Length: 329
Image (tube, rainbow, N blue to C red):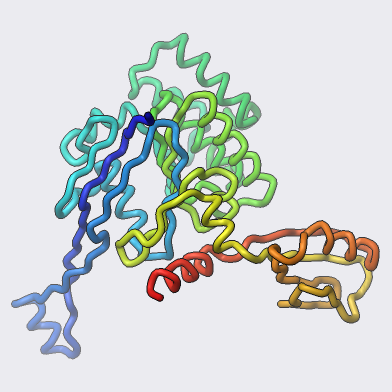
């Protein structure tokens, strides 16, 4: 039987927001006697995550994802409920927990901006009290996997977003954590950079049995990495199940973008809907339950002189909206 290493019971987080009253006197009154409105960011959620599991925790902006992660890592205190991560209470044992978890926040860096990544890695080895020989072996392993050898001596400010993100993930894995929290790890990256990061994360999960708690707006991240998906909306869980079930039930279309050498006069493909067309570019929404992408690409390459092809997932917000609509029916 799988071993739960994250347990959440009836978790709530309420924020008090100060209300501004209109006008000069309203503002003056707010200073003397402020009024507050309570906002329920996380509303009575319960979940378990097992050892070695890759869980996607997704939802629209403002759904409560980041607030939940901050409570799981001890950054925020819950208003009520219980949280247990690796046997620790994050709210009261955050420092002890930090030795066993890693985290990557796509829009917030843990690397020293003006120094090369090597300096941050060396610093982290001291903070986590790593044996020098074990640290060098671990660093070499991660450097090779993420192909960052040429970046170690380059100041972080000079790295591209994709290069920096690979270094961020290495920093989060340097101490061999048992759980890693990934918040938008591929945001803003190109297709190749995304695929590289996904491949290595999956490999490390399989080899080291690292539990991964992932949040992302990119359906590709969810499809490539997560065995299980939880969807949260308005602070509550609206879906908890296998990712393959999420894909089969809710990811029903793909957007195929074709870029051609020659002008496109009119594009028609049975079962495909043209959503955007320019002189040398067309985007087609394809119902993948009725038509294969291969069939469309075969037609396109036989009909046009194709310069480039891009395939996109529907926006995560659309998938979540479909789940939420079904939940309310």
